Length: 341
Image (tube, rainbow, N blue to C red; front, top):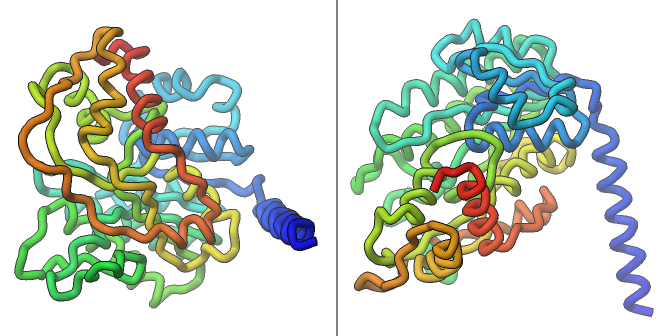
């Protein structure tokens, strides 16, 4: 009896979620910024596959042919491509005109410096555009970089874990790299603007290190995997890091507009901690196909990776995380099939 009671309860919950998602107007225009990026392209593909009409922004419309080749002509019948730049507020506003939803994925991800200004300017421009054009909801790609770097005395002590209540502190005595500062200040700017102008709903997605196959992009995640597989490393490095699949992060952006309880919340997107010997072990099977993944261990241990609580993403956004091994092997397969290794 308990089994059937639980089954009926689960069916009711599933039906409710389905009805909630059906309430989202799929005829409403979704604007997605940065659709030639690693996460942006996967997010755009996810929305298109789920029947949404999308306007995607790029820095140069010359990328249109590359985008259509990656997505396929059938899906692209629901895709409009426009130019917009993070430092050009007018171009962002123009791109968002007529949108029901805005998904802001475009932001610099590198460690060469100078990320703060475009990240904050782009996010602020998007928030202003949402208010100006009567957008229903905005979903912004932030990062766990905006969560995991508080001052030392403010960090959780085990068994406590980092959750969405934690914020990185750009002014902490320990200092902070430019990229982490850019994500923190940009997300802060979004929430501060929203507090003063709550005409629309806001959600922010804070992933750990994103990996996995994506239609486009040649950024940090892809370079990381290439570096692991192309013979650049003589030995397996030691350590661990928190990873999440790009497909799960893209889906989180979709579910954020489809599930009413997601409104006005932050979400950590994190699957699990991956130890480098395990990750390189999964990748080493591709050596028989031409990869050059090291198999000898370097000295050291496999500590690292902060304790992170992903409960909210699973309970509210209904994310079922892709197994980490699949994330890496699928990504490696993609790079090999493209001749990138």
